[in-house]
Image 1 (spheres, rainbow, N blue to C red):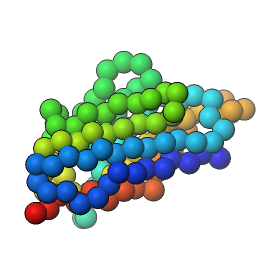
Image 2 (cartoon, helix red, strand yellow; image 1 turned 60 degrees about the vertical axis):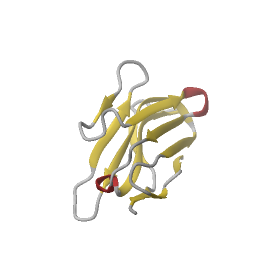
Image 3 (cartoon, one colour; image 1 turned 30 degrees about the vertical axis):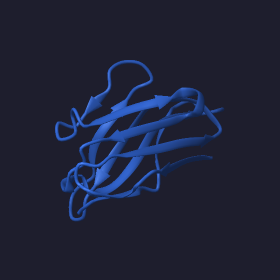
Image 4 (cartoon, rainbow, N blue to C red; image 1 turned 90 degrees about the vertical axis):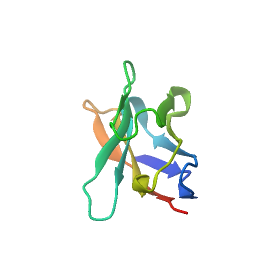
Length: 121
């Protein structure tokens, strides 16, 4: 009923930039918070950044000042602009959204399939 499709991952050199996109589609009434998480090999999934439908954005300390999250509500899309990338940013990045479907009462969390970001020279 809902799909989150990510794009924009890839291989980049240290200091480079990438922009991730995640588009939600389906029988959507509204979307509350949208965010990005990442998981490196052997590590737990961690929050990178989140943007609510209204209010302040939140970032992991490790990406503050380098990453910027934004959203286009008309397109049900969230973006993650990643600048000054470091090897430790290497991970699979997952999109997350809290979505209320048409004819439903309570919102639910949905996840994208993940996109690989590799920072290496």
